Each structure stands twice: as C-alpha cells, then as structure tokens.
Length: 461
Image (cartoon, rainbow, N blue to C red):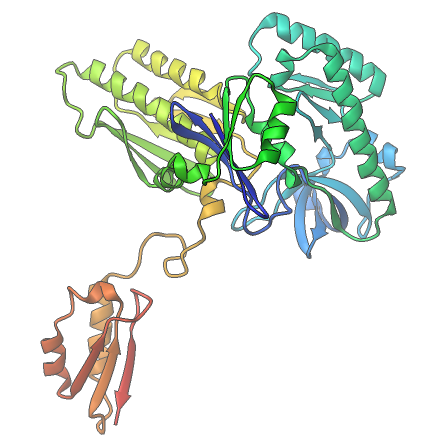
C-alpha cells in the first residue's frame, strides 16, 4: 500500500508492507534543491590535483565535489570543450547529496530518468535493473536497449517496471526523455551564472512513479490530482481519496519516530541495537527475553532470521548507507549462517539501492555495504545536538557540581545573596541545604538553565 500526503508546498509518500513502514519520501527541509538527480549550471572554482577532483559552485555559493575521472570525452565533445579550466561554466548533476560535514558530489554523467528507462546521453552502456530476475525479460530488454543505443547514440538503464512494459511504450518514453534533455541543454547554453535548471522532485509525477511498484494494489491520498496521476500510470490500482491526513490514519508519524530509535524490539523477544558513525553502521543482535527453547543453535537461527528481515527494512526506511557490520548471535553451523545470508539476499531484492553482502568474517561478523545517493532519514529529520555535538554524552553532573562549589568558595566578601541556575536534571541531585551551609548567604536556586553541563551563578551585593 502507498500513502501520498499532499500539502500546500510539499508532497510526501510512504510505502507500507504488511502494515509496516518500509520506505518514505520526505522533502529535505534545508537544501531542498541539492537533491540527487538535480541538474545545475555550475562554475569550476578550483582544481585539486592531489584529489584528482574539482570544486564546482552550483548555487547559493555552495561548492560541490566533482571527480575528474567521471568526465568523459563524449561530454567534452558534445559541448565543444577542448579542456576544462577554472572559471568555466559546466553542466553537472547531483550524484550524492551532502551530509553534515560534506558538500554534495556531482557528476557530468547526466541521467534523465523516466518510469521505465533512464536516458544517459554521454554513456554507451545498457544496464538492466538487478530486480528483474527473469532471464527472458532481461534478454528482451537488452535487445531493446541495443536498438535504442544505435538510434540515439546514448546509453540506457532499464528500470524494474520496464519488465511489465511493451516495446512501443518504451520508445515513446525515450522520445519524451530526449525532449527533456534538449531543454536542459538549451537552458545551459543560455545561462551565464550557476543555477538549478532541472529538479525531478518538483512534480508529483516523481512521487507516483517511484512508489507505484508492481506489488502495490492500493493508494490512499488526500488529493484528487494525485488520484488522476495514479490512474494515468496504472488502471489496476485502487485509489482512495480521503479528507483526513493518511499519514496520521495509518500511524506513519509514530512509526517514523520509532524507526530512529537505537534499540528495536523483535516479535520473538530479541532485539537489535543500531549505532552509526559517518561511514560505518554497527548493528548488534541480542536474544533479549527470547529463551523458549533448549536448542541454542535453533534459537540463534530463529532470532537472527527475524533480525535480518527487520534490519533490511530499517536500512531501506532510514536510507542508511556505507559499510554495515552486523553482529548476529553466534551460530556454529555453517548451514545456519548460509540460511541467514539467504534471508538477507531475499530481503535486499526489495531495496532500490545497490547492496553487496560479503558474508561472515573470521570473527563471526557479517559484512555488507549499501550504496545511497540521498540523505539518510536521520539527517533529514534530526539536527546535531547543540549541547553534546552529536556524541550523545554530556559532562557528569557531579563534576559540574564540584566546579560550582569551587566557584562558590570564591564569593565576593560583600555578597549577601546568590542566584544559582541549573539544568532541570539536577533537581534530584542537588542538596540545597548543603549549598546554603557552604555559602552562608541567602541562596536562590532555580532549575531553568538550558545546558546540563554548565550553570549560571549571579552574586547580589
């Protein structure tokens, strides 16, 4: 089931599988333009030979990172560039959105996606979605791709939905995508300054196209215009228009909040714990309260299989990328480990992002990677804590109080009153009578300070 919520200036979509939230699209609240797929007129600011890269200004004085090895000779020839130089305008596409400490990564390998196919003007390759498993479908689409490559002198990626589509409709879409591309080219040639010239997520069609998968049979939305779009794409889908908020009706907000927790309970009583760094995610699987069998191997395999499914769902939902290490409950039997890898592979077929599973290490840890181009859900919905700066830790309250008492001992001789402001978390820790005894002045204690690792001290004469 797909839920599409249309507000005045934003459209959000959610995919549910067995009533559980599996994927969600929420527009970024910050850099709304620098989303993966957006195309810019950029300006080369500086070449960095040591990195074999260039920094490109794209908009609002924001610099993006461009790998020089990504620039193909076909690109230079198309625009009549002998070579690139600093200060030159350049057409780039966001390849990977920026994070907390990095700007976005851009590429000159432009791709214009449609529902069935991706048009790549500077490529000569034909790609087939890995989610198309049937060999006859793959062979048919490969043949169509080769014909298109010869006709348009371009590369193409056959998307998953192309397997359900006839040849004629694919040809029609290629013509539509080529027209979009020519508009981009003409806009680029007329432009003088860095600016956004193509943003795919500007329209609701993007939302419908990306979420209306073959398995989807029901769509619930609060917009009649979304209903018409869905009908244009698929006639076999049940579309229901509601006056209420479909995200509220189907508990999406609560599921979103739950998905960002560190600890996740499994139905069997086990649990998984997710800890993240910038490039690495570590997931620990625990048996928790699940001890309903004497066979340790069977118990471990049962909890691990359950955890594998939930981990894959959370990776998709939270859009976690990079290196992923999973510490499953120990299993002695190699067949048990193979079974867990099989479960992971089956579940990752649902993921639109590329995933590599490398298997178990000698330490018994499972290694895998997940490639992503857009921000994670954590980055979209959360911001860095101004107190702990993302560490999750603050100064021990006893150390804060020790520092406070040292400063109290330096009180001015003429002081008769003091106002002490502490964080509310100190209410159960501070001994007000002890402070009065040490101070020997009138004490006004307030628990209104905003930071837990500091305090405010005001003397009154």
